[in-house]
Image (tube, rainbow, N blue to C red):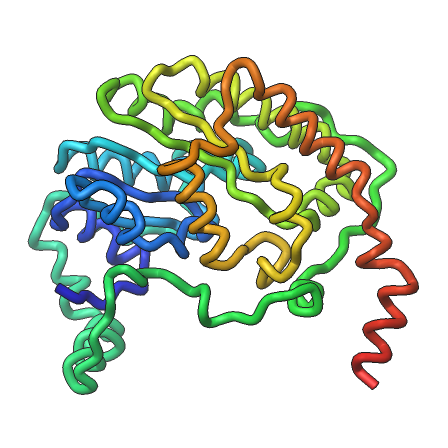
Length: 318
């Protein structure tokens, strides 16, 4: 069955309540380019739904997990965690106000959705009149709609002014305890579910931003704390892709300074489901974090922002 799936806030609750699945993929927009067929082809018993929330806060994923576990028996959760912003927000706050009438169990108030103008004209009639067929494998997938490369990335990257001050180590986790509980309470409550949690690979320019804002030590500290807390659980597998140099320093993978293409999503899938590459353990997590710290600190950013690069760009425009 092909469904028109384009709007996470409105469609995720319906997917979570009504689709047939035992596995979920969730996270920010960094997870949108996964294809469910990759996971289902790897294991015929796996039935997958993808329910991302771009730039989601921990409360978004609390809602995902609550709906999923309340309505289905979940074997595996694939969760892309973005640790640099979810631990500074209120644990009751979502990235955008959600249409709560779709997330509750009251059918009568769903009339607000059924008679919504956008739903009627933008989705329903458009789909019927044009006979448009959408492959669920491509739900929320934007990879083929963008251009990639350094010039493309620099069109959207505004380099922060370099700060003379270093933020405190707890700067990116001022609300850590309340937010991590939005995740770990499900890990504890469902010990037979495997939680495969990974840190997506932002480009090296994300780290340029952190350095120039004086937040590098804070980023290292929150990464270390999350890893130490999650590694306590036997039903958690943890994967770290932020220090994969051949990915994060190759701007042909990126449409902007954080978002990578579908090929990198496949690399993540392959690592988690087939090869076990980049898995984090109690024995190696400090080493992996230190590698990322050294890469961020020692990378030659002048290749991007130096005069030689500026001359190249001027000549290209001319």
